[in-house]
Image (cartoon, rainbow, N blue to C red; front, top):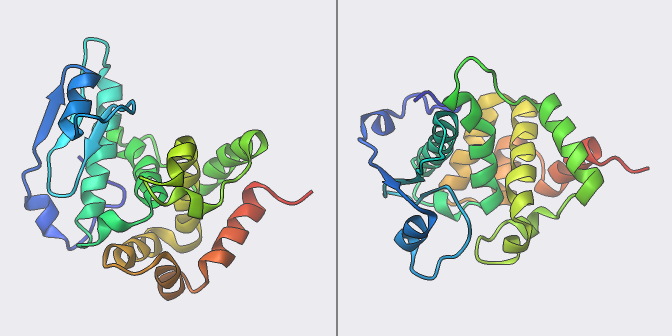
Length: 209
């Protein structure tokens, strides 16, 4: 599978035999995470573990490819550094949401910033823009904003790539995966504070009236 954010020079990921496990029901998949897990899902991945996918009689090839690409993008992100799983939740999911469609269907193109901005503008009109601090912790306040974790996270990932290219997005992720705070990683790799980055993002997707 080709990933748009493939990690050039990182041969370890290419050499690694990634195990994929298929589960026939959501209940089976949920129980494989932990017995009390109750959120709906179609895939799951933790660093160093197998990719877990829900596959039922109703799962289409297209849907399976998209979920596989999403979860494998997590594997690629986790390979960037030992602290990758400590990234803000919206970063992990936003990058996977941004890159998975092109990985699942090469040739369809990627979600570039103009298209991502239009989608986020529509979401902002309906739901507003959530403070990114509220989208950071999987076990915290972000659980009340799951849709925003994915949609707003994807838009911000596209915004960063639109301004700084794939190399800028990749370097930003490497700093985060090495354990840098969101503020330090943003200042060191993007040349701005995260507060200023968020303000610029909001000005694009939800301009003041």
